[in-house]
Structure formats: C-alpha cells, structure tokens
Amino acid sequence: MDAGTTMSRDDIEAFLDREFPQIHLGARTYFVEEVGPMRARLRMTYHERHIRPGGTLSGPSMMALADLALYVAILAQLGPVALAVTTNLSFNFMRKPARRDLIADCALFKLGRTLAVGEVAIRSDGEAEMVCHATGTYAIPK
Image 1 (cartoon, rainbow, N blue to C red):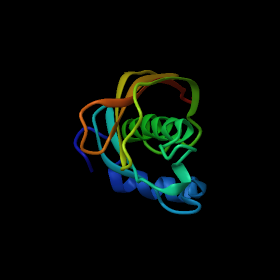
Image 2 (image 1 turned 180 degrees about the vertical axis):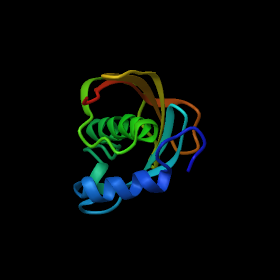
Image 3 (image 1 turned 60 degrees about the vertical axis):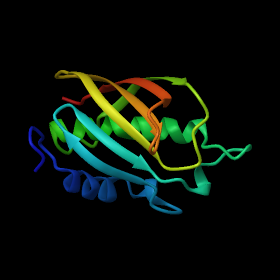
C-alpha cells in the first residue's frame, strides 16, 4: 500500500482492468505510475491510436489521460468507487506535445463527501514545460 492511500498502484491497475477493460482495446497505453496522498501520476505511451493529422498527439487523447488521472487520484484516496463520475473538465492546450509518452501529474485540491476537485499537468516525457493543463470536478456517489 502506498503511504497515505486506500488503494495501491497495483490495486488501482487491477480495478481498472476489471471494471474498465475497454480502455485497453487496441493496446495497453495507460499506466498508473504512482499514487500518493491526494495525487497520482499516469503515463500514456506514444501510440498511433493517439495521433491526429499532422503527426501530433490528439487533444481527445490528452483529455482522456487527464480524466483518468483525476479518477485514479480519487480511487487512491477513497477506494474502489466505480460510480464516481466526471461533472466538469476544463482544458488549456499549451503547446504541441513531443512524439513521446505523456506524463500526467494530478493533484486533488478538495476531496469532500460528494465532490472532488483537482488539476492535472500533462508533459511530454522528459520535458519540463506543460503541453496541457486541466482542472476537473468529480461527483462522488453516497
């Protein structure tokens, strides 16, 4: 178990494989790298299914990565809450991502009884500058 969390990285990966196997159709490209108190880090491997015309990683792929990072950070804190749902996501695409894996660092700002709020910084692997910044809110079932 990761310090300060309810679910470990391995627990979350197993949960996602069981409850959301469709995210891996075509190839496994999303990986939970680490979880901790009110945070998570995910990797999306560079794969042709995420490329848009012009040869760059697509906005929808970055959106999915950010949404998943928020969900994983919440799972790490609360445990296997399959029915937690996105209620809002906002994105700022900052620059064209490099042709390599993307790393998403998520930090939760609030984790209440019914809502969770956080942000996600997405960077090309090995680069310091963000390619995308997202904020989001999840509803937590009672």
